[in-house]
Length: 160
Image (spheres, rainbow, N blue to C red):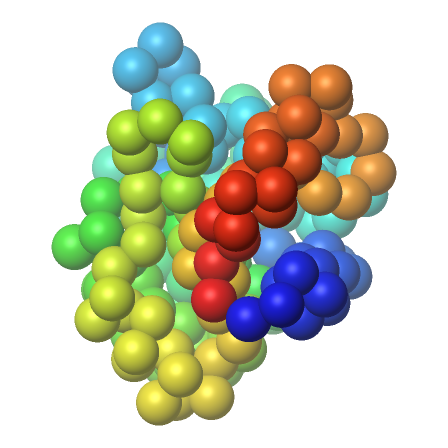
């Protein structure tokens, strides 16, 4: 996939107003990424819904156990979980009518991408971004994430 096609998918994903973030955590030290993405999307004007079946609230907002529990549904889901959980969430996306999914991958260790989940999305007609971080795109990108995006693009590591 060319960088242009990837960037088009990113643009389309971020153009959605209602986005769920699956993988917010109360353990901010060990699992901060979902929380950071949640707050960034909120700051950029999205209506954001935290998803974690083990929490009832997240930073004062209702936290939902699954996508079906979100009143009015969502347009897209950022997934920041272990790959085996990602596989469950994409099935939840299909059941909930969600048409866009972003599976997070950091530059270091840590990836939500599952080949099975990516294939499932494609079979179900769900647009999928399989890798990179939403914080590398859109309004308000910090210098660190801008540099990461540049390095990943330079080295041909953008997702397919």
